[in-house]
Image 1 (tube, rainbow, N blue to C red):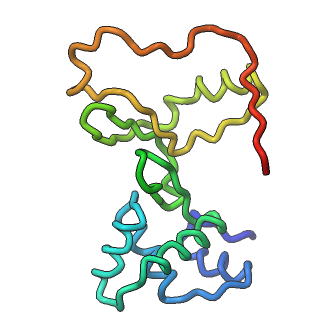
Image 2 (cartoon, rainbow, N blue to C red):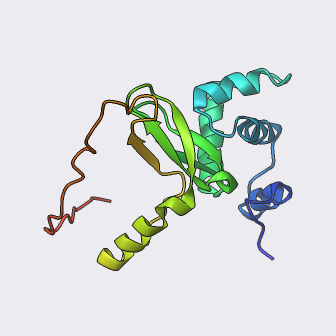
Length: 166
């Protein structure tokens, strides 16, 4: 049976299967992400520094985040213009609703995006991974007075293929 990043008991096996040691630093970083649920590297550093162990340099936090992300234990998303927000991969079960007015961030069930994922697949054959997708707009408090939904691009059918370099 393959170890799962969704089972905290299997995280040690995931490290070992990739030839990595399970260090106290990795355990502390992972535990802090679990406590915070969504965290930036700076927030994570403060949480780890407050857990009773030795302070960890921010560079160590970043290295651990990179490793945990590569292993599929942790995932990142950009909710704002700032640093990415990290979370346990098992927590990637919702969308983030980011208010353009007040900056509030709330969650919506991933199921509300099912029709979007189906439409993208039907149109382009693209299998969308919408876990932890940030959706920008206006919260109920900031939306009053807004009478129109911003232009979503209309029904223009031209090709939006972009070339990316490796």
